Length: 194
Ligand SMILES: [Zn+2]
Image (cartoon, rainbow, N blue to C red; front, side):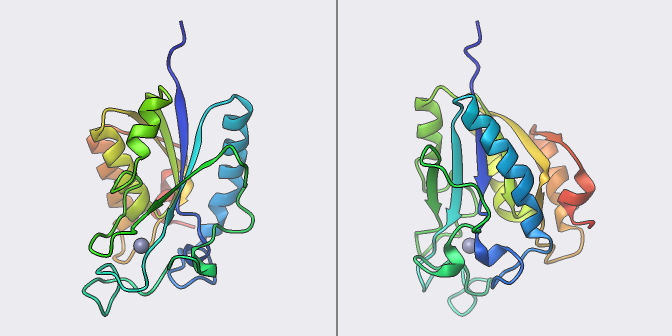
């Protein structure tokens, strides 16, 4: 009988990654409505929902000026690190903070967190992943999820790329598919076509 259980992982839908933020993803806020709908559906079925957030110290190797490539973003306890105000909030949602270690990028929701253990404890074997951004934290969370033995659905309608280099989003979709994730939805958008 149905011992399969799935979980939804909403990656980094934070102010700094949305229009107006310090590391804004073009059309990043467009992922909010479809993700809210999915979160509600999961919660209505009593299936677990996780939100990850970048939660960086003010000085980290991740930031330009300290050895990294990124402008300041999602510094702990700042407005920019807060979830977008339109993103569904619910006490049943578990928040996973990542990128806390000042020597790690923390792109993946599994990197330096207990997300993998929590999913196992819940009996989850399939994860659905969306959020920001396609070519960094979403991709890395998907790839790690597959590596950890989860069946992974990458929800193309609920992600947008940074595209530091043109084509990064499309490359990320390819990479997710190549490791064994199932891509569902509109890939062109997930790759950055608006
Ligand atoms: Zn970051």
